[in-house]
Image (tube, rainbow, N blue to C red; front, side, top):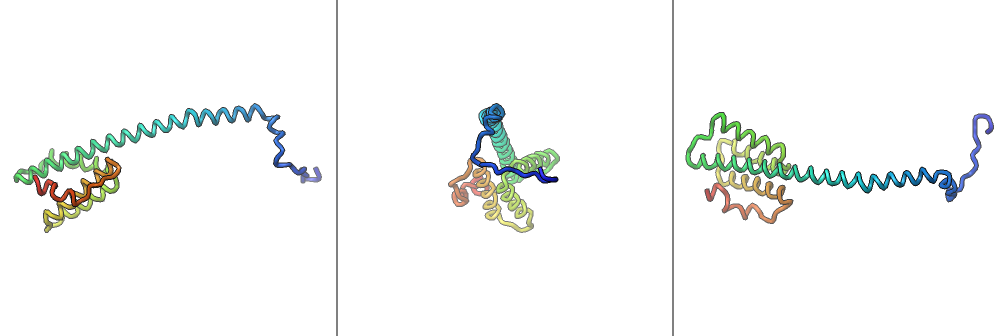
Length: 163
């Protein structure tokens, strides 16, 4: 050491003699890594799969509730029945809130487009039917991971057309 400076001898990067000195530490480190990769990651992966299954189940229940509520209201409207009241509003709000919580982005966007259109003073049932079909397609895509069904396939099958 000269003054405050230390002169370092050049180290050969291929020199692995330090491994002999720290052999136990290196072996322990490799064992810990093996444990992490062998036990912890599969555990976390399994937990993630379980969470995804619970979310998928909740989505199915949410979509079922929403579509059941939608169908009940549509049938009541078709038969000129009253769809108002505290309990009807509560059920509609619960179904909507669950949809907004668990629905995919595409489902929520399709639902929003339908609500905005149906709130207009002057709207036709053909366009409203198309927007409802887009909600159904978005739900299918979310639950099934995709679909080959198109809005054209649903045109004649809509509740607005078939009852």
